[in-house]
Length: 251
Image (tube, rainbow, N blue to C red; front, side):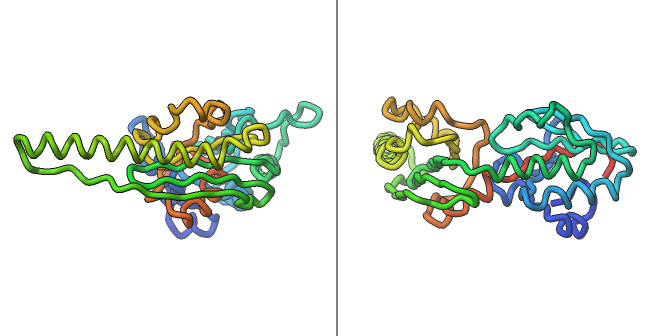
């Protein structure tokens, strides 16, 4: 995915499409513009390429988002993971866009302990990552059978719907049980919680009162991922550490 330019230039700059990153906010949005995800270690090069394509950059710094506004009207609003950004030493933000990108990347690379909880109907995963780069130190994945919707009608349809509802409730309960076992023991050490999967399924699982000590640390960013297998859980740091960039203006 590009910054509204060509795919080749984007790949050279290390851009990853938001859809690939699994945040669930890929492509154009209703209000205009486009979202892309960039790995922190590639952000400086991305910003340099943005300036090469669009002209001199004016910086609009902030602790929740940093905007790079180019001479031709293009703008890249960068949302760092785990906001806010720390206040700059001496109170002055870097004047150079690449240096400022480096500050964002450094913030992303801070040593943290992060809990991850992924839930879809029928599948779930919970894990704890520590260090920089993040290392998975505790995890558990599981699944429960949940039938798809039936096209039948009448009594059979009602019976099937009740069975599916019971299966869904059991799956969500199993997901919550797993999260309690994996995440709650780390509650006092967690710096943040990252949630993902399917929002509806997650809303049921996270409502379990046993998870309150960790759910109070949940970040806004939600990872829309496929069936939460162990490989998906292991890949989640690539998603939750990415810098989300909202691009507007000329292509």
